[in-house]
Length: 314
Image (cartoon, rainbow, N blue to C red):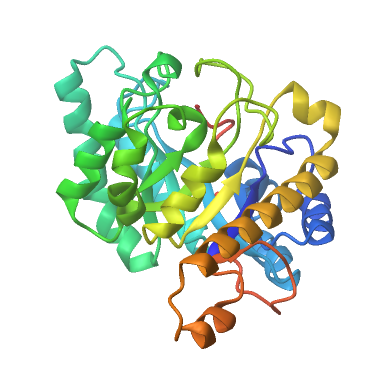
């Protein structure tokens, strides 16, 4: 299914109660939670608020920093991630977004070793909790001081090497939507990604750059989203613009606009798929409706799903 979600990072100055009101008004079915906001109300309360509204949680953001670049030791970062896994389980988040952290004075090989050691320590707990670790690569131009896991190829190889259902990928199209290689990588990305984050931009990615609402920049996002679905991706698409454009449009306006765009994408995707269905499969075509896209409400009560730190790098 094409699950549309919005992120609490977009509406950073609002609380969860207000966000749920806007979310349901826009007919969006899922939300990515941010750990500080979950901490503000408590994980159990957050789970109740989301569940009572019939909304799912698409992800919990974030944990990581295993290289010590933020001043914490490796053990402290692992303990924090274990705590985050527990929070994700309470709010029924299917995945916890993981940031590697910057090199922190280490060689790249040692930083990579620390990340692998952290994943090895966390994966069993994540699997037991039913939470996937979603490793998030960052584009090299936006990575300084933020992440050494800078590139789709390296991140894909790491996830594929673990070959573990509890170790997946968080694909951010704001970072990599312009890369020529992404088209060829779509089958592999669809196979290992557990969440896809969607925001637009003008110009190359940059540290601190605005994440624009879809359609306000120059990225060709719709073909990438459609291509991922065609290659079998069934996880959520999290729309998470952040910056001046969001402030101008207003949080509620951004989410309403997101719903309209998602519906348009879904309709065009369904139309294209119908044109490809051989005669004799008409019944299946009619039964699937919008194909693999699900952007609207009206599907009944839903199980809630989950996100701690003061901000999410990249």
